[in-house]
Image (cartoon, rainbow, N blue to C red; front, side, top):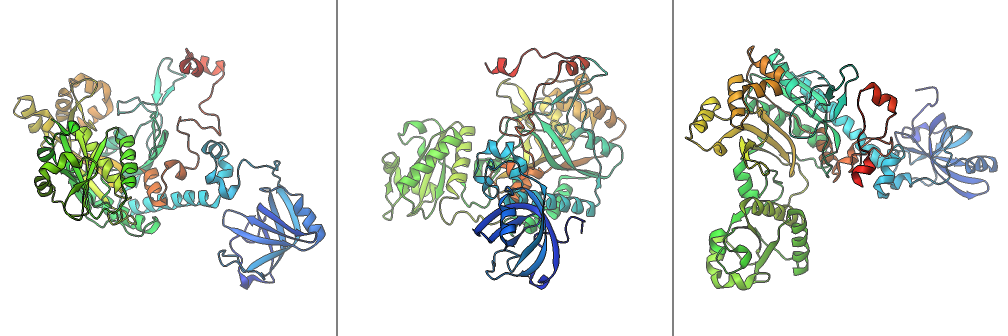
Length: 595
C-alpha cells in the first residue's frame, strides 16, 4: 500500500480485529451521540468504514472538521457491536488514536448532499461535477465505463484487430454534421477540423495494407444534445476490415458484444448470434421505425383499405396504420394519457377504439368503425380485449407515429415487453439515395462512402433510366439494441470509378470528388482492397448497460444541453492577443447573436 494508508475503506473485515491500521479518505458524516461518543463515516474510492470516537478530545476534534474534508485516521480495528449487514465493512469499526486533516473542506454548506447528488439540479451537478463524482452511484458508472472499454479492447485484440490512433487535427469534410474548426496560426485564413469520425483515415489504413484496425475513437460534431447523444464529443468503437463482407463485420460484433452485455449489463440476457436481420423497408412497415425495440411484441398493421373510407375525416384519403394491443385491461384515463405522450413525441395525433367482451367496438372513434365492424375485425384479426391505436396521414408521418405508439404503449401494457434483456438486430438494405426535404433533389440517404448494391451496373441502369435511383440499395447496415441505434456501418465503395459515378447521381463530378476527398480518391487509384466496417457508440453502449436514460450519466465530465462546460467555463472568450496570433476576428458576441 501507499505510505498514506495501510488499507482502503472497503478492505477490513472481522478477521482484522486487533490490527493497527491507517486509513485515508473523505469524512462523509459525523454523528455526535454525546460529549464523549461519536461516529464518523470515512469514504474513499473503494467504500466506507465506520470510525468511533470515544473520548471528549476525539469527539471535539471530529466536530471541528468540516464534512468532505480529506483526513487520515490511525487506530485499532475491533468488532462492531451493532453490525451493518449491508456494508462489506459492517462487522468492524476503527477506534482512532491519531487523526490528521489532509485537505480541509472550507465550506460548511455543500452545493448538495454527496450521496443524494443525483436528486440535485443538473446545472449544479455539472458545475460541481468533482463533488457529484464522489457519489458512489455516480462513480459506479465511471467504473463500469472503464471496465467495458477494457473488455472491448481485449476482445478486439483477441479477434486479431490492431489498435491504431488517427489524427485529431485534420481537414474539414462533409460528413453530415457541422465541423468544429481550429484556426491555423502558421497558415493564416486556413483551418483544421476536429474529426467527426475517423472514416477516411480508417479506409486509408485498409488501402495501406492493414488488415484489421480498431480504436476507441473520439469524435467531434457540432450538433444539438438529446437523451442518447452528447453534444460536442463522443467515443465509438471504430473498426474496419480488409477483404471483408457485411457478414464478416456482423460475425465479429456478434461475437464481441453479447458476452460484454451479459457480463456488465443491468440484465444478464443478450441476443445470441446471429442477430436478426431486418431490411429497412420491412422495419418501417412492421415497427414504424428503423430502430425497433424487439423486447416489445407489438407490430404495425396496414388499415388503409378497411378504414380510410369509414367517414372519419382524418382518415379520408390518407394512409392508416394500426397497432393492435391484446389483453388490454387499463382504463380510458391511461389510454388518453398515453396517447397524449405519443402526440408530443410524434407530432401527430393518434386515435383508438376497443373490442369488448361481446365483440362490440367501443370507445374513441367507435361510432365510425362500428358500421363496418365485421370487416375491421377480420382485416385486423381482432378479438375481445384488443385495443386498437391508429395513426393517419402521409406514409412517413404515419409510420413514425406508429413507431412511437409501439414504444410508448409497449412498456405500459403488462405482458407486451420482456424488458430485462438486451435484444440486438441488424437493419439492412438501406436506400442509397433519397429526395432531400430542402433541395427537393436526389441526395445521399446516409453514408456517401457506401458501396451501392450491385456496384457499377446498378448505377448505370439508373443512369439509363431502367430503374428509379430511389430503388438503389446500399450495402449499409445499422446495429440496434433495445430501440437505440448503436452504430451505422457499411461495405465501403473502394473503386474510384464507382465512387465518381455514385456522386454523379447527386450532381457532383469527378473533380468534386477529388476536391472533397483528395487523399481517399487518390489512394483508391493505387489499388484498394474491398473493405467494410462499423463504429458502435461507446457512450450509448455504457448507457444501455447502466440502465440510464441520459447519456450524461455515464460521461465523466459532460457538457450540458447547450454544449457548455459550466464547470470549466467553456466555451469562453479569449484574449485579443490570441486572436491576432491566429489572424481571426470576432464579428459578433454571443449576446449580440442571442439578442
